[in-house]
Image (cartoon, rainbow, N blue to C red):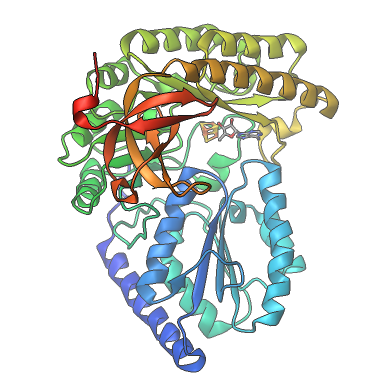
Length: 481
Ligand code: 5AD
Ligand code: SF4
């Protein structure tokens, strides 16, 4: 499929701006009645893609005049949901019961649900029947319509539901309210075509759609003009970026263009699929001054037999080979991963293959997940589901190994000086500032909050397992030798 239907829909964008003004009317009336602006909370469940979507929702709300808050007793509560594992859904149902109680006390309160979980029909049915106090439900494909949907919600009353099954539309340039002034996620593609047999994402996020390079570059240029120094390029599978564009562009080529943007200092990206990681990308990473030496490379399982059943299109051997080529060509590379334990049919031998890969690759950190059966995915109907006690036992063993190796890996940099992007005042100790190394590890160091948003050299005095305590270096004291 080409993306000839995909367009930067400026007419739609203008319509949505009109709806933002119309929401502003509601805000004005609320102010007159209550003597204050309506408070709005946008709470995110799930991944960085959802975080970025939430920034867009907040952008629309604040353009309409809402005051953003972290409090759940707000006048408008938006849950941007995740459904990748069953417990993400359970969390939302649990919180909804609590919100229902709050709504009884505040008749002005409106509750909005959106995101991946809403793309499942059974979820929407359950909300209609058990949580009928919810005011608005929409999905992942029409998030740019948020202002319009809010107007409908206020004007119609009852429950407004608008879920699209899929889309080929990409509406650009709606306002976004960034969580950080100095770093930002940037979507480069939406959806996923891989259909790993355990995964619900392709069903709820739809087919892969890449944004045009010029739109991505323009967005990043504007962000940099506005003080951003670090971007995270986001997609379910960034390595297949650009394949469906009218004029195909590779992810490696896109990175080379992003690198040229003035003012931008750090480039990150997420997530890479091992099957699509090209030699070109490795070369571009090794030559780049801005791409962070960090790669999140989901393994899922170390067993070639299970990888086949997962539809991952690589083997244990090809994955290991890829990691060793990466390590050779990108000095100081930090590798992180995702691993699923208890995929249907997993034997102790399969599990040992996973442990073996962890020992050989030596990840800096790994997200470990217990397999969660997602209705509608092929693996949900595989007959040989693994008993819970066995899965838990394997999970504990894997976690112990991942943590042990993670701690050892972190020690590598103790005593060295590295550049750190200062991100926020430390929550526990306000005399410290917390930042991140290029490899994504966290560092706490004594500094004035005025350094926040800048990149500065910090000596990594002590490794505390998963973070460092450090001291900022004044230029003359830095010993890079
Ligand atoms: N069960 C457990 N983990 C899953 N993931 C995706 N689907 C499932 C599932 N059904 C994990 C994968 C993926 C990460 C985002 O979530 O490891 O890389
Ligand atoms: Fe899910 Fe696989 Fe797509 Fe990742 S690549 S979102 S695990 S289907």
